[in-house]
Image: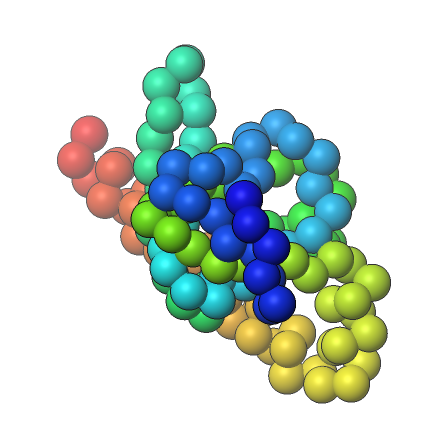
Length: 123
Protein backbone atom coordinates (compact mmCIF):
# COMPACT_ATOMS: atom_id res chain seq x y z
CA UNK A 1 0.00 0.00 0.00
CA UNK A 2 1.41 3.37 -0.90
CA UNK A 3 0.45 6.78 0.39
CA UNK A 4 -0.71 9.46 -2.03
CA UNK A 5 -1.26 13.16 -1.64
CA UNK A 6 -5.02 12.59 -1.62
CA UNK A 7 -6.23 9.22 -0.46
CA UNK A 8 -4.37 5.96 -0.43
CA UNK A 9 -3.53 3.70 -3.35
CA UNK A 10 -4.40 0.01 -3.05
CA UNK A 11 -2.95 -2.51 -5.46
CA UNK A 12 -4.97 -5.22 -7.24
CA UNK A 13 -6.36 -7.73 -4.75
CA UNK A 14 -5.38 -5.72 -1.68
CA UNK A 15 -7.98 -5.76 1.11
CA UNK A 16 -9.23 -2.31 2.11
CA UNK A 17 -11.56 -3.49 4.88
CA UNK A 18 -12.40 -6.98 6.08
CA UNK A 19 -15.82 -8.34 7.01
CA UNK A 20 -16.14 -8.45 10.81
CA UNK A 21 -13.52 -5.76 11.48
CA UNK A 22 -14.34 -2.75 13.64
CA UNK A 23 -15.71 0.12 11.55
CA UNK A 24 -15.04 3.79 12.21
CA UNK A 25 -14.79 5.41 8.78
CA UNK A 26 -16.09 5.41 5.24
CA UNK A 27 -14.24 5.59 1.94
CA UNK A 28 -14.74 7.38 -1.36
CA UNK A 29 -13.37 5.73 -4.49
CA UNK A 30 -11.28 8.41 -6.19
CA UNK A 31 -10.07 6.20 -9.05
CA UNK A 32 -10.18 2.57 -10.07
CA UNK A 33 -12.62 -0.04 -8.86
CA UNK A 34 -13.24 -2.15 -5.76
CA UNK A 35 -15.17 -5.36 -5.17
CA UNK A 36 -17.56 -5.71 -2.24
CA UNK A 37 -17.59 -9.31 -1.01
CA UNK A 38 -19.34 -11.28 1.71
CA UNK A 39 -18.18 -14.63 3.07
CA UNK A 40 -20.90 -17.16 3.92
CA UNK A 41 -20.19 -20.80 4.75
CA UNK A 42 -16.54 -20.26 3.77
CA UNK A 43 -17.63 -19.15 0.28
CA UNK A 44 -16.89 -15.64 -1.02
CA UNK A 45 -19.82 -13.94 -2.76
CA UNK A 46 -19.35 -10.75 -4.77
CA UNK A 47 -22.13 -8.27 -4.03
CA UNK A 48 -21.06 -5.50 -6.36
CA UNK A 49 -18.20 -3.67 -8.03
CA UNK A 50 -17.92 0.03 -7.27
CA UNK A 51 -16.01 2.73 -9.12
CA UNK A 52 -15.07 6.38 -9.06
CA UNK A 53 -17.29 8.56 -6.89
CA UNK A 54 -18.89 5.65 -5.02
CA UNK A 55 -18.86 5.51 -1.23
CA UNK A 56 -18.05 2.45 0.86
CA UNK A 57 -18.67 1.84 4.55
CA UNK A 58 -21.02 4.78 4.99
CA UNK A 59 -23.28 2.76 7.29
CA UNK A 60 -20.46 2.56 9.84
CA UNK A 61 -20.68 6.33 10.33
CA UNK A 62 -24.15 5.84 11.75
CA UNK A 63 -24.34 2.44 13.43
CA UNK A 64 -20.72 1.84 14.50
CA UNK A 65 -21.14 -1.90 13.98
CA UNK A 66 -18.52 -4.23 12.50
CA UNK A 67 -17.94 -4.30 8.74
CA UNK A 68 -20.65 -6.26 6.95
CA UNK A 69 -18.45 -7.01 3.94
CA UNK A 70 -14.89 -7.21 2.73
CA UNK A 71 -13.78 -4.62 0.18
CA UNK A 72 -10.87 -5.47 -2.11
CA UNK A 73 -9.17 -3.46 -4.85
CA UNK A 74 -9.99 -4.60 -8.38
CA UNK A 75 -6.95 -3.40 -10.22
CA UNK A 76 -5.25 -0.34 -8.81
CA UNK A 77 -7.58 1.93 -6.81
CA UNK A 78 -7.21 5.17 -4.86
CA UNK A 79 -9.57 5.70 -1.92
CA UNK A 80 -10.07 8.64 0.38
CA UNK A 81 -10.78 7.75 4.03
CA UNK A 82 -13.30 9.87 5.94
CA UNK A 83 -13.81 9.37 9.66
CA UNK A 84 -17.07 10.20 11.47
CA UNK A 85 -15.86 13.52 12.95
CA UNK A 86 -14.61 14.76 9.58
CA UNK A 87 -17.85 13.70 7.91
CA UNK A 88 -20.00 15.46 10.53
CA UNK A 89 -18.03 18.70 10.32
CA UNK A 90 -18.22 18.62 6.50
CA UNK A 91 -22.00 18.02 6.66
CA UNK A 92 -22.35 21.12 8.85
CA UNK A 93 -20.47 23.10 6.18
CA UNK A 94 -22.35 21.51 3.27
CA UNK A 95 -25.60 19.65 4.11
CA UNK A 96 -25.81 18.29 0.55
CA UNK A 97 -23.16 15.74 1.56
CA UNK A 98 -25.68 14.09 3.88
CA UNK A 99 -28.20 14.06 1.04
CA UNK A 100 -25.64 12.29 -1.16
CA UNK A 101 -25.22 9.54 1.46
CA UNK A 102 -28.99 9.14 1.86
CA UNK A 103 -29.37 8.98 -1.92
CA UNK A 104 -26.71 6.25 -2.09
CA UNK A 105 -28.40 4.27 0.69
CA UNK A 106 -31.80 4.62 -1.00
CA UNK A 107 -30.40 3.37 -4.32
CA UNK A 108 -28.81 0.36 -2.62
CA UNK A 109 -32.04 -0.48 -0.76
CA UNK A 110 -33.92 -0.34 -4.07
CA UNK A 111 -31.34 -2.67 -5.67
CA UNK A 112 -31.62 -5.09 -2.73
CA UNK A 113 -35.42 -5.07 -2.96
CA UNK A 114 -35.24 -5.87 -6.67
CA UNK A 115 -32.80 -8.69 -5.95
CA UNK A 116 -35.11 -10.16 -3.29
CA UNK A 117 -38.05 -10.10 -5.72
CA UNK A 118 -35.90 -11.75 -8.41
CA UNK A 119 -34.72 -14.49 -6.04
CA UNK A 120 -38.22 -15.19 -4.68
CA UNK A 121 -39.67 -15.28 -8.19
CA UNK A 122 -37.05 -17.78 -9.30
CA UNK A 123 -37.69 -20.07 -6.31
